[in-house]
Structure formats: C-alpha cells, structure tokens
Image 1 (spheres, rainbow, N blue to C red):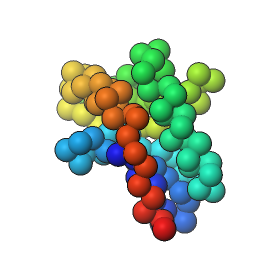
Image 2 (cartoon, rainbow, N blue to C red; image 1 turned 90 degrees about the vertical axis):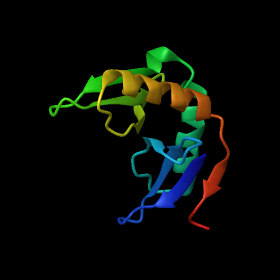
Image 3 (cartoon, rainbow, N blue to C red; image 1 turned 45 degrees about the vertical axis):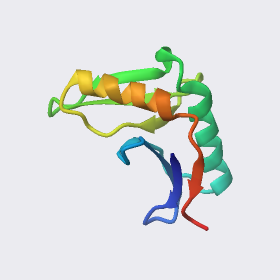
Image 4 (cartoon, rainbow, N blue to C red; image 1 turned 45 degrees about the horizontal axis):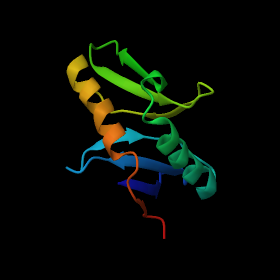
Length: 107
C-alpha cells in the first residue's frame, strides 16, 4: 500500500509498504500533493523494469537500492538491508506491491 503523508517540513511524501507493514520504498519531499501522486504513478510505471533499480552498498556495509525513472531521476529509496540478498528481496517486494492502492494520510 502507498501512503501519502506530510513530513516535519510540511512536504508531501509517499512510502510503499509491503503486506507485512514494512516500509520498502520512500520518496523525496514534494511541495504539492499532485507532485507526490505523480511520483507514485512513476513507481507504478517503472517498478517492473530491472534496469530501473540501482543496488548499492553503503559505507557501513549495509545494502539499499534506488528506483529510478526512465530519465534517471530517483523516484524512491529503500531502507537499509544487512545483505545484498535481502536488498534484492526488497526489490522483488517493490515489484510485487507497486500496483497497490493509495492511502492519503493528509486528509
């Protein structure tokens, strides 16, 4: 499920949650709700393409990934994972949950 919410800076953000409630993808801040919703639509459009994922290792040896649009812009970032295999499982979870409904927590 996608959730739209406002952060402490009053920017709109979305997060994609797996069926177990874990956050699997988080967006940047958007100044308008419409832009945030466009970001969700971009996830739905780009999540199935393996080439849109960038798998990275952090300086503390944790793994994470970015989901990018076809223009190379980062749409969302994952949480940190203990292993590369767990991060790859996170990518599969984004693919499996990318067509979920949207819940607007700002209303």
